[in-house]
Image (tube, rainbow, N blue to C red; front, top):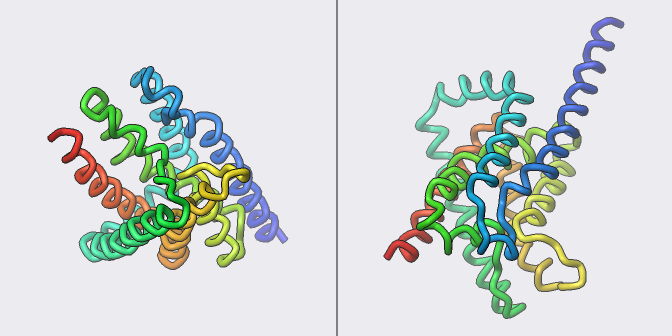
Length: 228
């Protein structure tokens, strides 16, 4: 009887932490990125403070899991990194092919929050590196894998919901504009793929390092154009 109560308390705590994490992300995390209307009048310090605050709170909430899972991940570090690299290749191809198909169908070029940062890369280098290499991989992994995973116990439903929400957050959904909905599909597929890896490995550092590789490569490709 006592064991059952303890399990119920743990479940409730994880449930409450997950909801609180998502609220923090919605209130402060999303505000860590500029919008199309604010990117030209950009206050880097403001966005960095919001990002650091969100990152600190989320890492604090899941610190126990993060610490133990990193110990497990580093036992076979290079093997695990190779797996992350393989998943990155899949994600990168999905996004490239998906965005090109979307453009052919809708004739609308996809733009997400990350793409707004690149034109200002020269003047906002520190912010760009922080967002791409530290903030986004860790925060997105915690929210779309840890938090949502604690809320949804059914694995298939978890993968679908996490992927769909990830795609929505990457592009933004305007139900009056079908082209925007279509443009989110490649990111939904990527989100489902990353979540499937998390479900199988039960370790947040698989999505974290996959996103680090993904955004580092994206940063390298995009920066070569802006720094040329």
